[in-house]
Length: 164
Image (cartoon, rainbow, N blue to C red; front, side, top):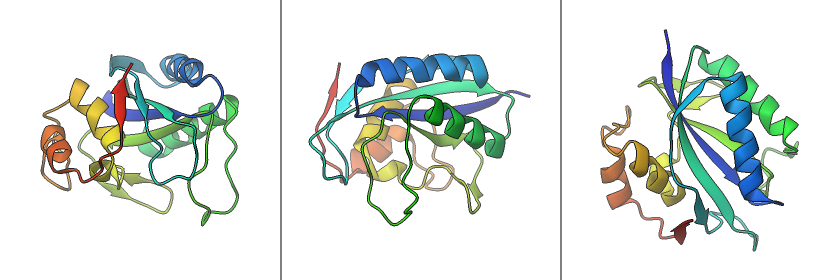
């Protein structure tokens, strides 16, 4: 059975657009078919002390991989693309070559030590909601019971987001 998964790609180091492209290639070759992709957005850093803006994109993929294995494959792709993770889990967000977050996995709700689905901060982040609204505006958040358009309309994040 194929699962419908939404992933957020983000990069603010080096050639961000190239890192997003490389991530899409890795995802399509190793994880599953990319069935939809949003525009790429240039976004103001969220909750970070950096001058480097991000490029973000949301992908809808179809895959046969369970959530835990999917997370492990994503972490491997991030590492292959030069992502260095801090060993200090209490450290604030850092710049990165690539970040791949699992936003939704079907309408599954999962809360384990390693993985929370849906991503716990979707509703707080315009840089997630704007691209989600491009490709799945009526997708219902399985915990909050609101669609992506409604979540964007009530989002209190006013960060600058520009479609490129």
